[in-house]
Amino acid sequence: MTIVVGYIPTPEGEASLVAAVEEARRRDEPLHVVNVRASDSSEDRRYLEEPEVERLTGRLAGMGVIFEVQQLVRGKEPAEEIVGAAERLKASLIVIGIRRRRPTGKLIFGSQAQRILLDSECPVLAVKPST
Amino acid sequence: MTIVVGYIPTPEGEASLVAAVEEARRRDEPLHVVNVRASDSSEDRRYLEEPEVERLTGRLAGMGVIFEVQQLVRGKEPAEEIVGAAERLKASLIVIGIRRRRPTGKLIFGSQAQRILLDSECPVLAVKPST
Image: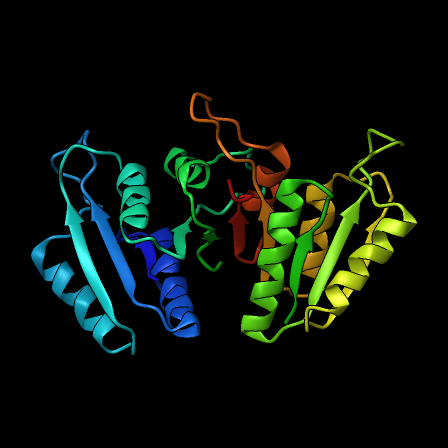
């Protein structure tokens, strides 16, 4: 079994990575980190450049989990790639980061998070950045 | 730390209960089961009658976890009660059951699930009934 996490360099992405590492340790399962370049943007800041990938793998290497980082650029939405990876790997869990609701804010639910929650065959753990 | 699960006698409720018990064992934490009578219905089939509560506690007692079952009827939405319980207990996790998307179906996301995901301070594990 594997834990799949979609990583992007945002507070939500960080929260999901930290939670995914914790789950990988708790379940003693490897971690599969997916970073996707969205189809609608060629200069997507959420897509990691080479030095960022090196930093990420360096961090993960010090965290005591078996992991791999996969970058995908093939014109699919992040939700589709993340759910696809989980199916391919028969994952036990997908971890996603979701936005914190502002005290005055109305309901805003990210479309990628919603698609992952709806389409995933396996359980989905949704975490938020700490305040 | 405690794990909070909202239980209703549906396939989604069953899936969330089974997953919550698994998490309680994995984390070695007690389980707090919340069953809510929705504000808009006095004959709510999702609210457990006495024999159903007994069956539920009997099942949980055989599952090797520390647990309590709390029934709430005070005019609040299930999402509000579940998030409230998690805050009160400083829960480590909320477990919810969500509906499976039909192959031909459009996006349907339960309003209670959405509110829990948005409003919860703690991580939320979303599970689906098995096919």
